[in-house]
Length: 469
Image (cartoon, rainbow, N blue to C red; front, side, top):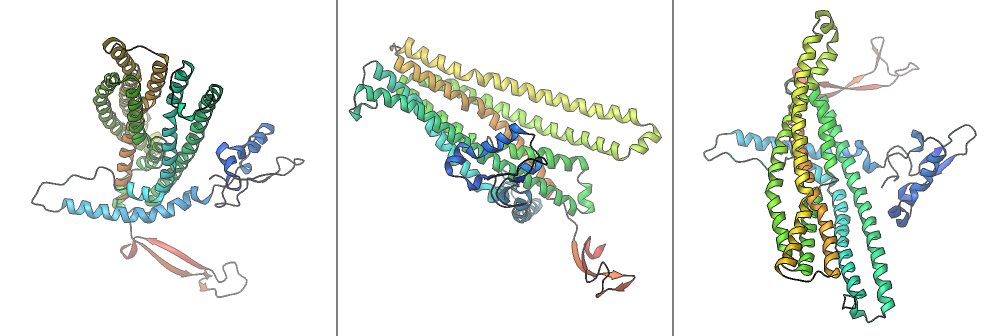
């Protein structure tokens, strides 16, 4: 966790004297705290108190632990990245070769997913475990509410087998209705902690890998990429992959929650819940359509962004020539034309997202309307509080997976496009690197000792290009 030893120093916040007369302040990092302090974030309280007393400075912050440093993650990631790109290059070479049969389709996910999972899969799975605990707890409040309403109406409830007194039953239900939301909140914040941690690590590893790849590109590789594209790879593409970690668990969690809530609804209102489920089934093709359209528009928008950034970088690097030849107006028109097309594409993406969100947000309401209409109008069932309120609670909870699932699919589309762009960049040819040892020389002679500044120093030089120059 944050505050573990590694990186630039120890596991504490370090000692910081805010002024000449201020006392030295030292905080303990997360790794030095008890599990209660970690879960409740009590270890942050002294740091927040200091922030209320004076302006925080950089020296007040903890050095990042080793597991979260870009240098540490990039070393592990680069080794696996090289192997993955070698396998992908071999696969592409086999596909290009002559074949008698039809051409094989490429893999569903980019090959870049494999080294990312090998490096950060443990952190992602840890967050997924707490997400599973959180989802399972969310099924219980509606059940407790239904049992409590049956208890106060004098009917049998799920705590009846305990053979407690009436007062004890009431206290038990009140305790459960307090404890369950607390446990759900605690498990949720732990899940978000690991989701944020994995996103930070992935973004740092990808950005560092792009930088190192840029340093190794051959002349042919540099021709296949522009400065604007490199900047977009380091900033936009790495950020999109990292942002996905907050929502990637919704891919399975949304399905789990939807199925679980529908099963509980069936237990309360019978097959009337099928009517509500039918409304949800109708909405699924709409989600697929919007996902496909938004993915295509995102890819188009990214290409336009690359082109615009390339023009702007060329203008800044050649500003003297622009001024000398009075090309400012022509370049401005060209940049504005590309920017206008980029904004029109962004507007299309925003409109599609708005349409998708509006349809999905009305989904739970339509589901509840259809279910209760069938329950009361067709099945002629009595609308009891012990049925209505738990059902409304479940329909309210059903709103989250229905609303966020399209958002998750959209983020997945952005991340897949970003990974494919990064993978294409990592497959560019590199220059051969040869490392030789150069003896230190002073005044044209080898310096083997003495008091001169370069005494006994050997210089390791890396010559890019190898023997071919």
